[in-house]
Length: 363
Image 1 (cartoon, helix red, strand yellow):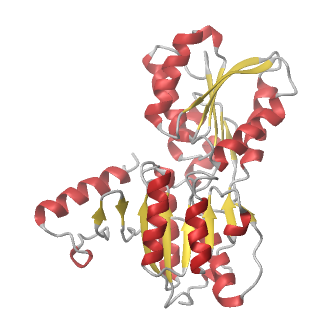
Image 2 (spheres, rainbow, N blue to C red; image 1 turned 45 degrees about the vertical axis):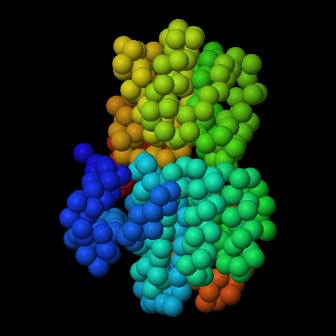
Image 3 (spheres, rainbow, N blue to C red; image 1 turned 180 degrees about the vertical axis):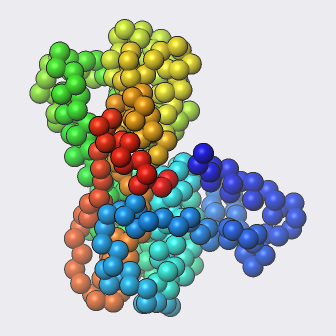
């Protein structure tokens, strides 16, 4: 079973409080820790388990930015995480910070508990610590504008991960999944597997975020061409397993299991919440109701794809560190221009390839 890293962080924090070992220099072996403040967490990120380069991204990690020299020495990077409550975000935060440290950056980070106002305050806190670079997963496109304006005014370049903000002048680049392509890929899978049509419940992530907007758009781009394929309800699951479970239970109560053919979620956590709801109601996923997910592709859900309980998953890899290094190297060393959008390398998992791909998924 995979470790519940979020729980580990909580247990470690309680242990340090009870033993008086709250200082980073006294951190227990295996995870470096920092101080916690209300609404903000400044932590030095743990060393990630060793992962194969192929499993990480499919990106050329031998690029000049990742050669191993300490070209980032003397620079401080801040990582403003949206939240630290599921495996994607934990893996993304830990590995990006680890990769930045590998080339000499001092790294400080905090997390916003999935709250826009907190994330704005967290960015201001990082700026006050004198960061030279901000790496951020914005909670939403519009709400984070003030935070990135503060970075612009301070002369701090910004790299957006997984999401972006609505004003592209405020960031150097956004390294992220092609969410529209993800939605279209899942939409085409539905067209191919339901030639006579189907009724869909869509469970979206964070309303108003880049991922939510673009994944919904991609799905609609395909299925709107077919009258027999309909989204009968679109609900917000906020990327949380518990929220998606509740939404699914409510939708089954509203439409009955015969009134829903497919549930499309926008991340794996929500897909697992849907599965828990269906199992709890005695409904057989993959037979009576099919679950598809646009995003993530962790081992837990791809295992379900292999077993036939989840129909398909469009991957959204969390291993974005090598691409962050390439961009940072251009910003601080070679002074090269950077593309405004850099797509991450993603796969599409179905029952035809899930068994083969599972060994390469390390989160």
